[in-house]
Length: 126
Image (cartoon, rainbow, N blue to C red; front, side, top):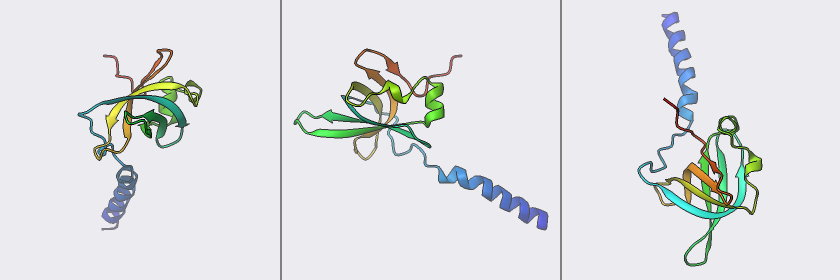
């Protein structure tokens, strides 16, 4: 009986971190949005990084969009570094938008004004 109880507790403890981590269900992976704006900030942090850009709407109002990506170690493996995104530089971002319409998305691709592309999750080669 003690072995079963210990094993059950151990399994529960191992599952808690998995359950505590949020999923990407708040993003609509069936849709893509592309916006062009000015880099406001790059939050190169764990567990997720955010690239914030200011986008001028058709009405002339400025909206800050946030694009979520992986943490620094994954971004570094993808060739993405904070020095690649200077505050004030122009950038075009593509991502899967939030389902609730807020100005945020999962980062699919970033393209700087010089044409250089940054993809945080490169597709594996077969």
